Length: 274
Image (cartoon, rainbow, N blue to C red; front, top):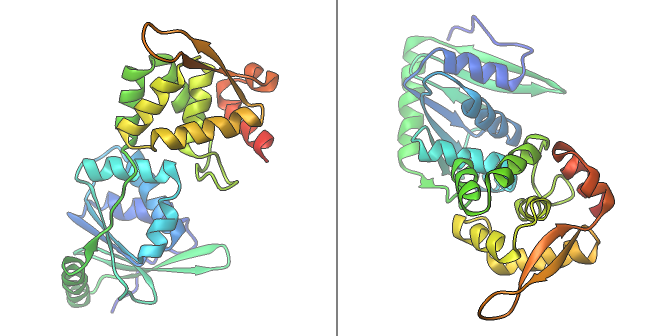
């Protein structure tokens, strides 16, 4: 096994970009760490050329944890919709994280804060590894990703609420590293409600949109609205309608939020919720 051209002391994203730049037809990523999955989704989302068919085979618990982040999951859903990414789970995984194409096998080795890509490009070894992991892939089960694709979220938000709301949603997400809702970034329902309040949209409209697009149920939107209202982040005013109970218009209730630039909205809200 030849180990020339090792990709030592590089960021995971650099190693992944190097492999994708090699234009393989299929890229198998086996037993990736949480960081590797996040970086892979990021690299694939931002890549401007033709992507290979990316097959990601991971432990179910690892995938579930990573996909709790709305930013990662919604971008992954976009890639799946485009046919560029498939996610599958297995309990039978090697101890190493591997990147496998029909031309190279790379073992990702992490030591402290450094990553090494140990490369093997011996034809016979690579062919055996590629065939072996392809066979393993075909025997595994699809991972069910319930998060909607970010492009669909953006498009429908612009159509159902407003173009300004879509732009604000984009800016808020771009300002965040994660959107997990566990104290490490706001969750997607909170973000949606804050954007709706900034644009003085109706609770009925934003919660119906959120349920229709697959973000969360109307009940979840209602509970989160109550929490944000109780904590003084947003307020409501009644808007009469022709038939039925008045609808509630959302507004930002806190002066710091009202005065914040859109790209600061998440940070200000996070500090208040903490």
